[in-house]
Image 1 (cartoon, rainbow, N blue to C red):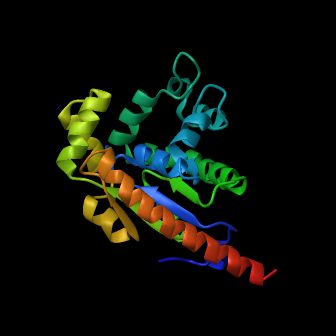
Image 2 (tube, rainbow, N blue to C red; image 1 turned 30 degrees about the horizontal axis):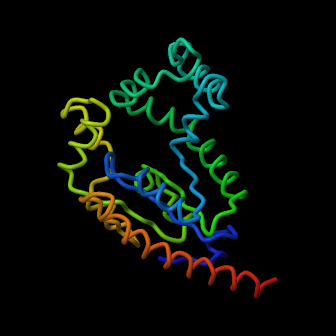
Length: 219
């Protein structure tokens, strides 16, 4: 799906990195960052927006009341997670507040990128709509669903049923793979990731250089 800078409307080569919960998105993003990529993490941006005094908090409190905040003034994540799981309308109202702000912040962060290319780490890239068209390539981190469950249970201390409930709200493994231009298999360990990332890094560098060359021809 490699798009040109004209369709992408940005002057850098970009990748949308995604995967289901527990697939290892952060690990992969860090390995690309070590090779010189700029990582724009939408989860980190969302946390910043909903921290105490975050830019989204006034709108969240106006929409959901003071109960949406915890004792420190940040969004009460556990409470809001339970609410949106049980109430689709509440989920839509929350997304209407957060998604435009996250998008604006990600574009602002990418505009200042100094890396060889930009990777947007977007957990719900397939589900949220619009991201596939805004990046040059989609990179999916893939692993067995049973491994996702085991990793999240170990990492977050959540019961199996809760992990599976979270997974049920995300795109299926098949849907993510159908949207992918590139796939990294993360069923193994770090040693198995390294050669896959090294190979894709060279591919992305080549794409980035080609895009830069095309842009210079239009100056």
